[in-house]
Every structure is written in C-alpha cells, then in structure tokens.
Amino acid sequence: MKKLIPVVIIGVLLMSGLGAFGTATTGQHLEQKTQTTTFSPPVMQDQGQYTLVTIDNANAWLRTVGAPMLPAMRTTYTFPFGTHITNVAVTFSEPQAYPLIKAVTPTPAPVTIDDRTTITAQSDTQTIGALYPAERFDYTLGAGISNENHVIYLTIRCFPVQYRTADKTILYSQDAHITVSYEPPATQPAPTADYKLVILAPPKFAPALQPLVAHKISKGITTKLVTREEACNGTYFPVVGQDCAERMKHFIKDAFDQWGTRYVLLVGGRYGGVIKEKWWMPVRYSHLDDLGNFEGSYLSDLYFADIYDANGNFSSWDPNGDGIFAEWTNQTKEVIDLYPDLYVGRLPCRSLGEVTNVVNKIITYENTTAGKDWFKRMVVVGGDSAPAENDSWYEGEQENALALQYMPGFQGTKLWTSLGTLTGPDDTVKAISGGCGFLFFDGHGNPLTWGTHPPKNNSWVTGLQVKQMPQLTNHEQLPICVCGGCHNAQFNTTLLRILKGFLQEGFTYFNYNFYRGEWVPECWAWKLISVKKGGSIATMAYAGLDWFAEGDYNHDSIPDCVQFFSGFMNTQFFKNYGVNNITVLGQAHTQTVTDYLNTFDPWQERLDCKTAQEFVLLGDPSLQIGGYS
Image (cartoon, rainbow, N blue to C red; front, side, top):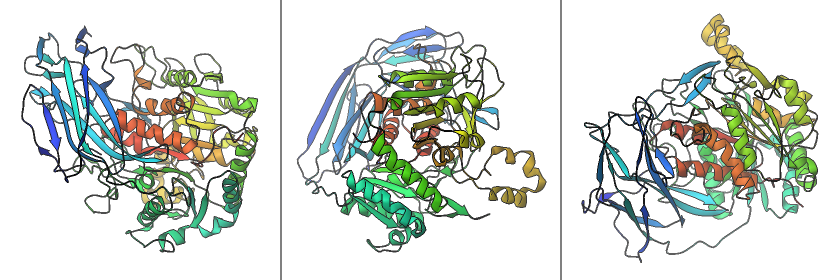
C-alpha cells in the first residue's frame, strides 16, 4: 500500500535526486538491504510529433495517462510479515542534461468496449510541474502471501530520467543506490494448520458440500465447512463488522490467524432482490469510478482476500469510515493495501443442484485428470480487439500467442479470426468439446456473450454465448479458463434486472441498458462452470469494464497489449503456471494479482487499481491443477 508508514524526511539533498523516508525505530536491531544500479545511456527516438526516451536496461515505465512516458527501474523486496521498514532511500548520481527538439511522448490512454462502442480513457493526471516526475523514486508497501507464507512486499520504482518541461530537456542519472533499513519481526508465530481450507456457505448448501470436505481431507488438506450464520454470528470468533460482508472478512482474518487458514472458498451467489440485492454469500463492491463515469462500482472478491496492511492493521477498504468501500473519484481517493493475504475463490451457486454439480466436477477433476492426454491441449480464442489501419497488432491473438509460449509441452489450438479458424460459436463449441486443460479467450464481452473482430475490420465475430454453453460435451475433460473481456464475470446478474430496469427507466430501458445483458440468469464465466455436460472447472475473468492497451507506443517490438492492463494480467497467469510451476489454482491466481501490483503502482493510475480489483476467480482456490497423481 502506498506510503503506509508515517513518513518523515530524515535526509537532505546530498546529490541531485536523493530521497529518504523513514520512521522512528523501536530500538530493535536494524538491518539493511542495498543495491546499486547503473543505467544504460538514454536513447532518444524521433516519433514524428514527439520524442520517445528509452533506457535499454530499464524494466518498467512511468505511465500515467496524459503525462510524459519515461523509463523506470522496478525492484521488489520480500520480507517476513511483521517486518518494520524504517527507511527507504535512493541516491542518484549527478544528472546530465540532454536538450530535446520535441516534447517527450505522452502516455497513451487504454481503451475498452461498452455496448460495442470503443471508449478511450480520459487523463487522470494533475498539471505537470516544472520537473516530471517531481520525485526521483517512489515505493509501495503491502502485506501479502507467497507460497502460503505471510510476507511484506516493498516495491521501489527509480526514475533515472526526469523531464524539464519548460525547455524540453531530460535530466539523466547514470547510477542509483538503494538503501532499505528495516527491523525484522521480533518473533515469528508458530505455524498452525488446523484448517488450511475453509468453505463458507449458507446452511442450505451445507449437505451438498460435505462430499467436497471429505474429498479435500483425503488429499491431505485440513478442511472445515462453516455456515454464513456461524461466521457472521460469532460461533467461533467474536463478531466484528458493520454488515455481513465485513463480519465475514473479520471471520476470515481470525481463521487466518488462529486456524492457519490459507484457502477460502465462498459458496453462494445472488438469489433475489429487485432494488436491493439478496445474496447467499455476501459480496463487496469497489467504488472506483472509471474516468468519465463509465462505471461507478463493480464486484471485487479481492476485498475478502486483503485482510492486513503492511503495518499489521486490518485492511478495512474504508479508511474514512463513510461506508463507501474502495472509493476513488475525482473528489476522493481511498488508498488501501490491495495485496491478497490468502487465496480466495467463489462458486456463485444459486441452487442446491448447482452446488452438487460443481462439487462432483471438482472431485472428479482432481481424481481423474492426472496423466490424461487431453489435459495437454490448450485452446486459445482471439482476434483483432481494436481494429485500426495503422496498428499491425491483433491484440487478442497476441495475448493468445504469448500465453502459448508460456505453456511448454501443451498443444495449442488457435481459434483466430486472422486464420479463419474462428468464424462463430460452432468453432468454439467444437474445440472445447474435444477436451483441453486450459482455455483462453481474449476480446470483448458482457455477461451473456464474448466476441472479437476480424483483422482491421470493425464487424463482430461471436465466439461463445451463454445460450450455446449447454451444447458443450467435453464432460469430464474440463479446462481452466481465463477470459479477457468486459463484465464476463459480473456474477450479480439476474432476470430481475429487467423488472428493476423497467421500474427505474420505463420503456427507455429497452433502448439501451437492456442490451448490456445484465439480466442473464447466470453470467458468462459462471455459466461456463455450471453447465452439466462439460464447460470449465474454473474461470478467471473481469467483473467490470476490461481496459487494455493498443499499439507499441514504447517501440520495443512487443505489443503493448501484453505488457499493460488486462493483457499483462491474463498472460501472467499462464506464466505462473507454465514457467513458474505454481500448480495450485488459488496460488497461481493470487500470485498473478500480486505480480500486477508489484509491476504497476495502483495509486498512480486508477485503471491499474481497477484491473487488480476486478480479476475474479470463480472456482476452488485449493484446486490441484491437472489433478492428483
């Protein structure tokens, strides 16, 4: 979380660009980490109207929409939870001035699709000062999890180049020296594993979940089923919280601390309510407002996973206490931790039959998948997400291609509009019905459909709709699915939205909002799991608007769509499984969100914050990918 510790300036400018932040020590033994980086000389490229500034060995970018786009160096440190960071200092060498003829390239805006209309994000920057960035480095702190261990993440971003706007001059420093002073935790709590997995569900669903409890225990995972009422009414721990969602989060925190819980499966979706929603299992909405008021709130199960901040405090997501959670508007910005502390997934079941169906799927998958040939197949589906004559990249296909590179040993089936292998839903149904271990869509969506474009053509090709999912016949050959697209995991949908829309808007509801598809009984991501004769075993997708990058604005010959926003998130999951060998579903999903937060400062660009909050896991977080051998 940005600037979590109360900071005081303890240093002065010793050389151009020195910065130091610290806190009072407690008298414990101080330790230090140091690192010196030598940056390559800056390269200035004439891009017509602007100048692009690059540094060969920089590993990040300072990218805030509308502000100058400058190279950066990102370094992440991991400490045991309870570590007290007392000082972060970066010393830069004397800067050298490089006058430019043209201004530095501004950061491009990401885009999204709303009701088949392309929307470009507006700038969220304040007026750029005389020197940008004003500080030579920044950092974020967060409490998170790594391989079931509770940790503190410290990510420092150094800016070897500053831009002096008045005379179009860059100031470049060749060296940066980082010093991190910290106090290790005095003691480490004794590890416990009373219940590594906790399943939370309404009492109605409890009987159907007992076979899953027994199955998990048989695989060596200590498991406890807790009803919503038990969690929220104080059966096991004291009741804390203003509503059921907050009481549930406090219960999860207590289970984490006292039971050693590391996996939480929330079972229950929406079951009614016209104006006020009714839920089998509580939810929380983030109130980050997209630039231009496109979307003022959206579901975020990350709320239940982020239980601590880096100071060891409860991460309430409501620091000003006004009852509006994770608020970020043009007037208010609530800075919260965001880093998940444990692995959370949800099965938004609406009936006992759905619970029974998905429990049987999980048990069968974990018992029978290992060693099967079909698991080594991967189906990717994409096209040209943002057709443009001057853009040679087909964004969906580029993401698909990178994901396949991250999956050695898997046979890829490419359903691409550029190849003519994706012409409509029949192509997708046939490919999935043949069985595969992984499934990756990247394009556009809403709760009832997913689609994309042919190359450089704004016409639409439908890839898969909710109504076609019952046609899937892959039976027990169930893939893990990642889907890039807006609202595919908006799991608050219901037919009652038609009544709500009519009551609030009259017949005008059917002129526009009806076509958003929010009235579908089950959203796209959940329907793919809940179908009986096939579908997926789990789906990761976006609960709100999915923002993505276009082109190659940093001219590194890598399309920006895979380097930033949802494209980075989508493909990073496959890297975590296929390259980093993370084989438990919740760990791979959570590490992907953590990697995103460590790569992009979520408090500099609100759409980075949103991307992390809305990437939801619908599935069992303790699922052994590929089954048990």
